[in-house]
Amino acid sequence: MLDIKHTICPSCSVGCGLNIVSKDGAVVGTYPYKRHPINEGKNCLNGRNSILQFDNQIEKPSMVKNGELEESDNESVLKIIKDQLASIDASESAIICSGNSTNEELDKIKEFADGFGCEKIGFYGYNFPNFSADVASYDDIAGASTILAIGDIYRENPLLARRIVLSKENGACLINLDDVEKSITSLNADEFIQFDGHLDDKIDSIKDKLDENSIIIANKICCKDDFALLESLSADTGAKLLPVFNAPNMKGAMNRFDSWDAEEVKNIIDDSKVLIVVKDNPLMYLSKEDIKGKGFIVDISNEDNAFAKLSDVVLPGKSWVEKAGTFTNCEGLEQCFDISAEIENDALSEMEIFDELA
Image 1 (spheres, rainbow, N blue to C red):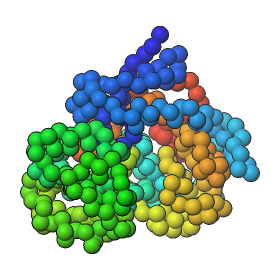
Image 2 (tube, rainbow, N blue to C red; image 1 turned 45 degrees about the vertical axis):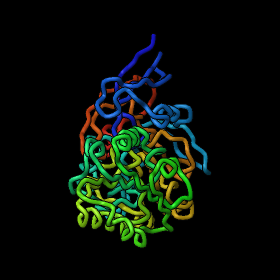
Image 3 (cartoon, one colour; image 1 turned 180 degrees about the horizontal axis):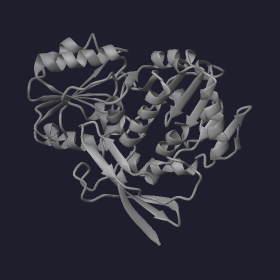
C-alpha cells in the first residue's frame, strides 16, 4: 500500500512543500503538496528528482581501504572515530557542516564541538558570507517594478522564478546578470548583462535602474566581495535583497556557523588531523589533491560518491525523509516537518551520531 507524507523539498533553500510516496519501506515517488503556501501545489523538476539519491547510496557504515568501501557496523566505526579524536588535541580537529542538516542537528553538532573544544567549525557557503540583515520576502517579488536576478533563477529555483513570471505579467522589468553566455533566465529577461568573473564593472550600469520598488535576487556569487557590492547596491538604491542558496537549510547553518569559501576550507583541511564532514561533498569545490592524505577524514553522508572513497570511515546518516526537524528557508521562515518515510537500514541521524561521540 502506498503511503504519502509531507516534507520540505531538499533541492534548494526556497522551502517548497513536497509529498513523499513510499511503499514497503522504499521511496517510490513524489507528489506536490497542494496546500503549501510557497509552491502552491507545484513542484519543479529539481524537487521531483530529489529522490534519485536513493538509487545510489551507502547503506552500511564502512571503512575505506585503498579507495574501496568495506562494510562494517556503527559500533566499530564510532569507536575508530572516538580513538582518533582521543589521540589529538581539540585544536587539531575540524567539522565541516552543511545546509543539508536540520536546525536541530546543527545545534547538536555545535553542542558536541563546544564540549570537545573544536573551534574550527563552519560550512562551505558557495561564496555567500554570513548575512543576518533583513531580506526580501517572496511577496515582495509580486509588487516589484524591477527585478535584478543574478544567476539562473529559472533553472535552479523554478518555483521562485514562477513568482518572477507573474510579476513580469504585472509589468515588472527583469534584468539578468550572469557569467554564462545564455541561460533560461537570460532568455526570459528584458535585459541580459554578462559579466566576466566579478560584478564590480557592471554595478554602476545597473544602479540607476533600481529603486525602493526593486528587488535583487541572487543564487550565484563569485566571491564574498561581490556580495558586499550587492549589499551596497541595495543600500544605495533602496532595493530589497534576497540571497537564494542551493541547500535547504543553508540559512540555518549561516545563523549558527561561519560561512567559508573554498580557500578557507582548504586551509582548514590542511591544519586538521581529524576532519568530520557532515552531509557535504568537498569535491564539489576542491580538488582531490586538496583533500587526499591530509588527515583522518570522517564522512557522515549516505551519498556514494568520490569523496566517500577519499575518506577513512563513512557513517551513512539518515536521509531527510527519515528525519523530523526544521529547515530555515532563504526568506528566513523556519518550517517544521516530520518523518515522511520509514526506511529499514543501519543509518543513524546526526543527533544520534554526535550523542555517541560526545
